[in-house]
Each structure stands twice: as C-alpha cells, then as structure tokens.
Length: 233
Image (cartoon, rainbow, N blue to C red; front, side, top):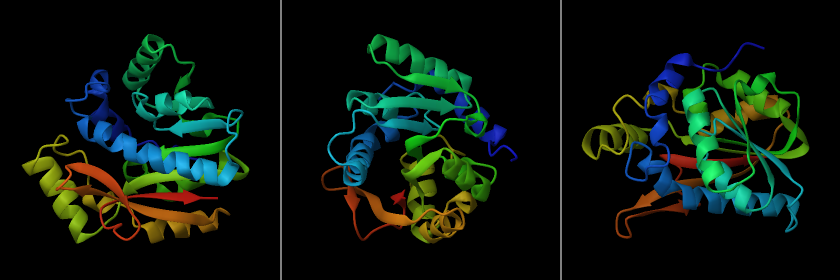
C-alpha cells in the first residue's frame, strides 16, 4: 500500500515541533482542546471495554509531541505514539522522560508496523493525509478484531471555512496561516462511507464546539459543523 504521508504537511508542522509543549505557542489550540478530546476518548474506551483497561494496547497515529499519549499513559494503558515528524517525536520522548512516563514512541509510517492494537487513535490527522481511503485502510489494519478506532477532524462546511480558517488563522491567529486547506476537510458521512468499505461501523459522532461565554471548548451532540470526533468499531 502506498504511503499516506504528505511530506509537505510534515514539513509545515516540523518547523514548530520543538514548541509542542508550549501552552502559549503554535499548538495552543490543541492544549485547549485536549481536556475535551480526552473526555470523549476515555468515555468511548470505557463504553467499549468496561472499567478495567489496564491491559489495553493503544496507538496514537500522528501523535505529534505526545499531548494525548501522556494523558493515556496516566490512565495506565500500554501506549505507543507514532509520527513521521522526527522533531515532534524527539520532543515527545524528551517530555515523557521529564514526566517519568513509559511511552513507546516511533518515528515512521504506521503502515510499516505489524502489531495490532485494541484502540487506534487518529486525531486531527486525516485532513492532512495524502489519501483518505488508504488511511482508513491503514487504521483498520492496525486494529484488532472488535477493536475501537477514534478519530477527530474538521467538517467541510461553510461554517468551518469561516471559523476554522478565516477566524482561526487570520483573525484570532490561533494557528499559523496555511495550517488547513478547506478542500481537505472531511465530512462525517465521508469517513463513515470509507469506514464501511473496510468493515468498520460508525458508532458515535460528537461535535466539538467553542463556547464564547465560558471561553472553553465543549462537546455537542448536535453541532458537528466544524470540529467533531467519531468512534468506529
């Protein structure tokens, strides 16, 4: 299978990879999103596997500097993080060592792995890959039978163009300009269609919205027009 890695996307993020753990730096939005993303991830894992998750093997594909991996490590699971950006992986390894966390980090392409996992996580990555269909196949190949796949991305809507690009990149400057391309955003129905072709069944889709009153992100069962998370079995 041809690699799904888009080297131009890797190069775009690599220039800031040493700042992954700077909460006021270029990855500030992910730091603010992370508590809500982790709430969803934990709920979906427990709903699928029950309360005892200590022996689960989980991989975070496109793990970046390890924001999600470290949270999962605190849950007591066996966690592997993989990313094609060597700078990000080095940053992740350094921070895990400082935090005294046992996380297996790999720099490379997840399609070259042989192991299968109980949970595959792919957050904010499918909108950056070279081939969506091939990436869904990759995720399925890394998943054990009856495993759980959790993804997050940005919907391709007029609202996401206004908020995800114009507002986030040009007005609020939450992320560097050029971080996202609207035509690469992915609708939930498109993920569901690709997933079904590979024997995966969409189980839950939940929006992730910004509440201007509380100045915080929160989950929404009804508003998936911009950011959303989706769980597949």
